[in-house]
Image (tube, rainbow, N blue to C red; front, top):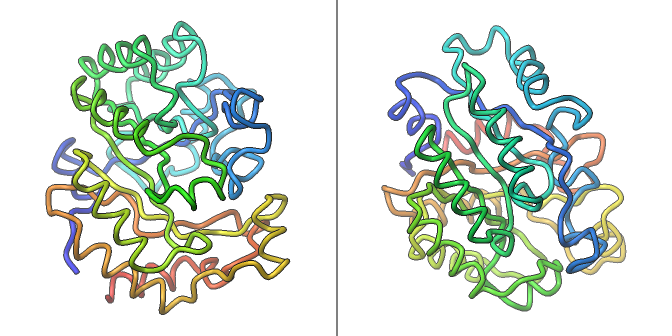
Length: 288
């Protein structure tokens, strides 16, 4: 199971190991502020998937410095990616985005910008800004797709249809921006064949990178209620490894795999509990 890892890609691109610093710019999401919905995606934590990000009470520069302190001793290259992770990071007036993004890329140790967002939050003004910054330092845009299947998308309250994703990828590629897509493995009701169909589709859509994320049930989410009601079961360890191997086998060599698993905050994790043993999971993946 050979693949093009993010670590290798970053070394190839920047000549050294690069570490991502998770940031919280204080944005919200159209699936939370009432534009689309108020309860968020069914699996999303209260932190808007930014549970490992720094505090939004700090400036972007302060968050970067804190992030550097966290990994001091682990990285000697002094090269970092500013990762706007929490909530929807293109969902704000473009001048607000400009201020936050430029504060990040103007930091001497930041070599690239990574922006997690939704395909339905990429207006032409935002795309123009991202293209402008991409001419200064590399920009990665990470799109939360999760699945191509409409029934599942409605269940998880994603809030947009597949054609919106297709259009977003098309515009990002026209702007020359590195595009990464998030997929969740183990969504309720989906078979292995469904998951592989999603991976095949996104790999043919023109993307540059992919994140394969294990479904986690976290405290204080609507997904937790359905889990406790017995409406679905999370993946067992061996089943996940089997699905993961099949996914990697069909991902083209030119697409960078940014993630092969994921770990929710242990204090909030309901299921699958085996995923909390990150070392065991990563060792099993590496062995596979």
